[in-house]
Length: 87
Image 1 (cartoon, rainbow, N blue to C red):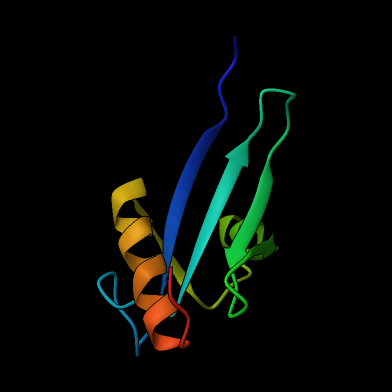
Image 2 (cartoon, one colour):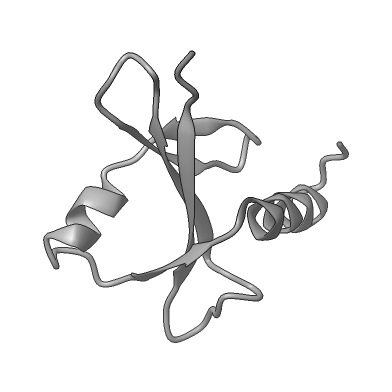
């Protein structure tokens, strides 16, 4: 049985780094094929985002750093705290 693969990216710029990123993105490859790019939003959900494709095409001013799932989970928790929500 095929398993979904996910790659996470921290969004960094001159004000943010990998430990405290400006945003969090992920690319999902569902077993059905293709991929879906999403950003973690202030309403604590994953929503469509074109940023990964723009970054791959050098059309984004942000830089993306690939991170582990564990790092992504820590960033999600920090965003929850920052945006006033609990787990």
